[in-house]
Image 1 (cartoon, chains in turn blue, yellow, cyan, purple):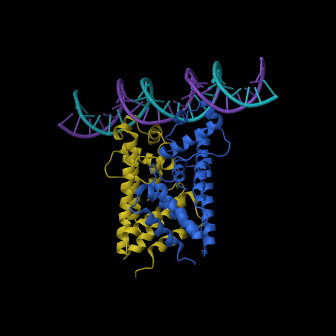
Image 2 (cartoon, rainbow over the protein chains, first blue to last red):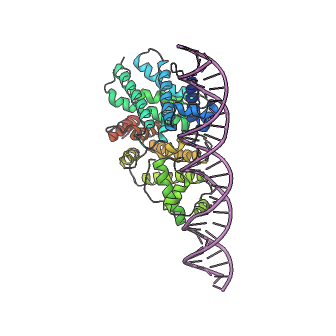
Image 3 (tube, each protein chain N blue to C red):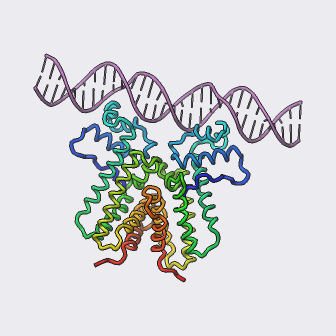
Length: 196
Length: 196
DNA sequence: TTGACGGTAGACAAATCTGTCTACTAGACA
DNA sequence: TGTCTAGTAGACAGATTTGTCTACCGTCAA
């Protein structure tokens, strides 16, 4: 969910120029915000011709949508890297990713929340891409909660989502003293006593 | 904390033109985002001359800072309107404000979180104004928790802040079915059994 | 009556934004 | 050899951005 600043795009056999654009956009949009970064800057730093840029991304907003989807892919990859664990341990590991991301140098909070703040229209493709990622994560949490034997996975997934977003905000804006402790405290309180 | 879209500025005996600018900016910035709204638009809708605008706000960022401070004032006023109640009831009422705000037509989430997303530099005056508001609210929650007999008001205030931000995000991006229920559920779980 | 003050109206500059278009280059392949 | 494809380089248009500056108006007070 959080920002994975400098990873590679690496989605199969896509064009090299396209990948360079998307990687550069991912880095710049995350660091500077979507509206504040112009396509000229991306084109220059990606070392690509303007015609090539507009060949792959006919409008800036389509690049922004691809950026959000790329962040979604990076977030899912980070969760995949956790590997097989019991449901409860997986949930805790997912939330630990927030602390991992927050410890990275260029951390600037959640790329999805930041992007959503710049797109007021909920029907905009960018907002829809954000919504897709959020639904995916919510569903993942719900199924993990069910596997953990949670009595009401639906509402608990809602609460966990609230906690996750709040922790991402806090880790960015407030930088609390002991973030990992705060995360544990929050999540364990929501999960309740272990069903073991 | 949430957006109070159409209230009046009304801060003492300030200039009328200045108030018109700040009110218009508050409405437009909240609805459309800070970078997406140009000063020309604000000047036109406020019905003010450009020279007057730049007399009161020598740069756009100063207007943005004033906008954040205005939202802070509106948020504090909404909390003041709750009146005298026991500490725990006050906390619950503060969180109910999220549901109230979310029910309003032009609701677009938390103005502070939205604005912070557009200002990457933590040292920027706009970010500092946001930080001031967040510290104020955190301290308010902490003292209410202490009055409620909470055993560890510091960490609980952290958790309540996390929950508040998460609820503001959820109420905006996810629009959960029963927001008021989710708020109660979340807050009561954090507050624990009543100390009565 | 004079002048300060708050404000209006709008031209203007300089930069920056997105997006289009032309002309050229290098490699792959038939 | 000829052609298709992917890409480069960069001029250009048109709109929009922030910010400055000039000229003017009305009111109130000394």
